[in-house]
Image (cartoon, rainbow, N blue to C red; front, side, top):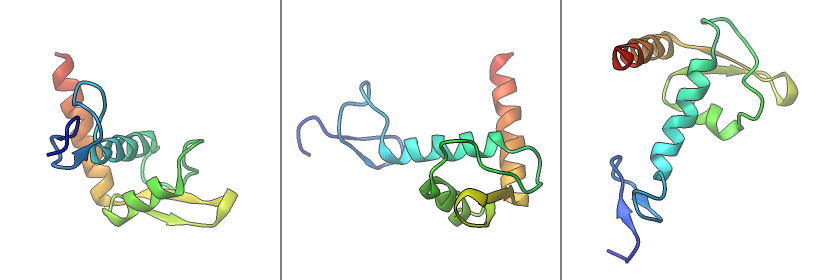
Length: 98
């Protein structure tokens, strides 16, 4: 192992210590979760401002969303899997608050 490099909880190589940064894989998951939680139901909608095409594509590859349109008119919607995932995560977050 190279000094100052460790493996994160996702098993992906981090470029700094665990206390100082989030691994690339965990950062990607966070971005996808922000996208999923921003969705207003399963209707077609514009992604949140600043959402990259890469994040949209990764969420689509994992089966969480569908994408349509190009450039400024791009829209997304949650799939059944994405909707179920968000609902489970909301319940998990609520349980942590108690």
